Image 1 (cartoon, rainbow, N blue to C red):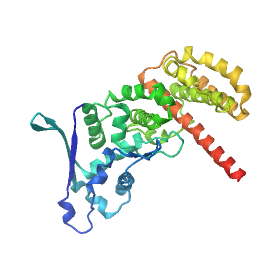
Image 2: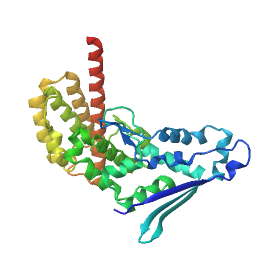
Image 3: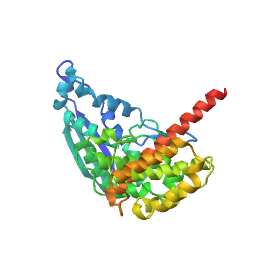
Image 4: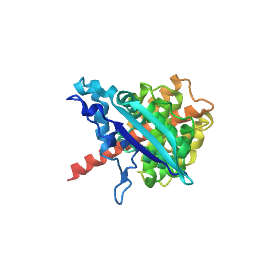
Length: 330
């Protein structure tokens, strides 16, 4: 794979002029590019601290502070370099005012943020982690940089790549792949919601989303949870391991047998609350027109998002119940 290096700087001549003008640390603007780190002995990703500073910076134009009025006088520059034999080649050149840059960054951050697999509030995943998660090519990385820093649309290649990684059996089921599961879901949401109001409303489970594919994704997560609870969470593989691919592409021919299995073998062993949730999701799906015959690529992405959101909601509740039980036993 072609090695690339991003060199960036701010034209800060204006910062040295009038009193009160904004001072910006270049590393904060580039913190999205970091790789992040994993805690020793765990699969927990720790984003670089500069990402929190970036989010504070993105709120600056909305504060009405004097410094915000000088953002259009300061410019951000980035060159993406790579070696070509004995020469250094400029593969990408980005030049924009800080005011425009912050608008692009805010749009990107809203679209890429998603709840964590555990149901906890989502944090901003660095681009370096997203690149590793789906093995982006150098050309795709440069397209992503144009999206992040110049406001270009998400590259068409990104969605099929993220979907392919998301529906991998290992990514869906192996705890060691949780960071990749989280990252690919984040990229799927990015493509679906970039520049739209849904970027904010779809960060976590949205019970009011009536897209049939999203509801079908939720339904598969509900059926999996019913199976897991019926077994007392002592089950090696679930229906997701065997049927995710079929359910996410041909729902009409897949969900019938899954629903029969759930209602006869698993549902009698679980709480009334979970049965009620199944009825609510099925009612929403009926009102949306029932099971579609086949899903196109975008609908497969909506399915993945609904599945991810509902699964995260279940894991959040399960963890909360365990914490409550532990507290009561002490």
